[in-house]
Image 1 (cartoon, helix red, strand yellow):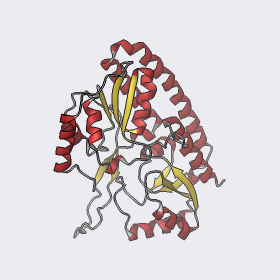
Image 2 (cartoon, one colour):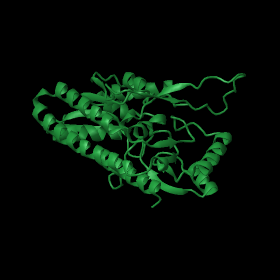
Image 3 (tube, one colour):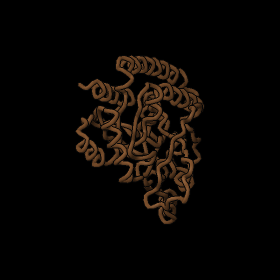
Image 4 (cartoon, one colour):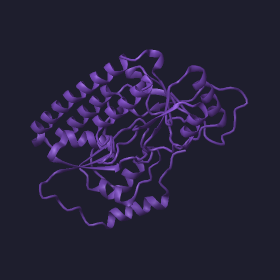
Length: 314
């Protein structure tokens, strides 16, 4: 289950905002922007350039699914002129945080225009089994940024929000966005070419967290995960056994851990099957600045390099 903000914490957040000194105006008058996750913060920093100051609530290697907001987050929202959220059910804690902060800033849902994917929800640990088999419960997959085509929508939506909040910066936002969209188009072409070069039968991998549905649909990869869409759900022993059997029978070439999940389960599966551990993928968050996925583009390049190498058996 996702974590929720307790009543006591809400009061603490509200009090922190009420008694905090008004945020000091930056000398260069940059537009204060708050993004919920590091990936959206990166988009915003590129589009905004030197006209914006971007704060990410969930930082590098962070997990937005189970994030616990702090009084400092409420202060950040209270001083923001624009707030950027992913939506699609990713930030279950955000509405309460917005209310506690008292922010008057416009809220942009960066996934506006995205065609959402539906995915099967995992059963909660300890949940009673139904007497009769039921149809799988479907939930919305929030990881839309994993498709570069969707990333372009994020960027365009952020551009429009910046122009609305800071009309004087339109020329700068236009130039930054055009240059970045060109880079994303180039990236998209390279990723597609990398996977087209591999036989379809080899494009199957195991990951710890079911976060690559959009990536898989866009580039023809079959991702299999022992966990569901929420990183706080536990894989059952039965499901793990099924995966091990499937890996052996279908000759899946690699399993991957992710930067914001516990890798013990995947290590166990790799050990029991003899399948190569393909490395660390970045799904819900970027790496720190000195890591291999400090920007969205470097994240996609890093993931693609690891995936293609594992599928090719190199």
